[in-house]
Amino acid sequence: AQKITQTQPGMFVQEKEAVTLDCTYDTSDQSYGLFWYKQPSSGEMIFLIYQGSYDEQNATEGRYSLNFQKARKSANLVISASQLGDSAMYFCAMREEYNFNKFYFGSGTKLNVKP
Amino acid sequence: DAGITQSPRHKVTETGTPVTLRCHQTENHRYMYWYRQDPGHGLRLIHYSYGVKDTDKGEVSDGYSVSRSKTEDFLLTLESATSSQTSVYFCAIPSNTGELFFGEGSRLTVL
Image 1: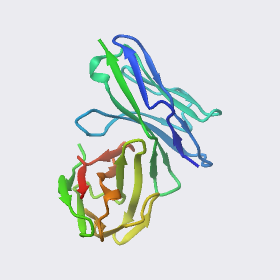
Image 2: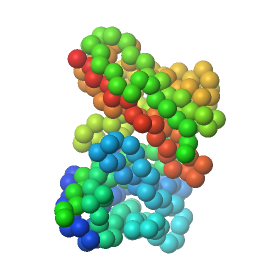
Image 3: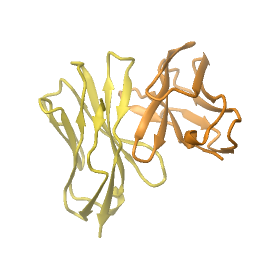
């Protein structure tokens, strides 16, 4: 079974609007971490935000927030006030802390921000 | 920033030839990982290492081998490259704050 599922291959959003990128995960571990990465067309992987499985509050980093719903096993990324520079691939990832800290990635969502 | 470099950054080779990609870190980290990135698949774990001479298979290890004789170097070898191994390969290590830190990537084309 897929560990990480991103069901939106591509999305469009108008500049200055908010957008939500979906991510669901599958694990039987109690302790895990959830991450979002951005990959611009230049190819580097940029870490955006982290949520621990025991964190009770949703993580926020500037314009990024992670909508963590543990019972649903979802970890959606919300980008507020989209900017043209937000156009990129976005990957959701999960770290299994009792499994050699291995990270599993989703297939990604291509976000295009329209002016 | 974590010090992690990959070489070569770009390589074109022919089917059946051996290829070795090198990952070098200056962070003295115990864990190192090799991923491949393909459209529609995201990043998939090939092999990982949890110490010198301690390695194990990931999700897509067929056709690949690895070696870690020193803490700082993690080598990925394609013994006999095939066109299906055309991909972008990323090496990664955990950062001090827990997220995975990636090298710049190595683009491999197998003709």
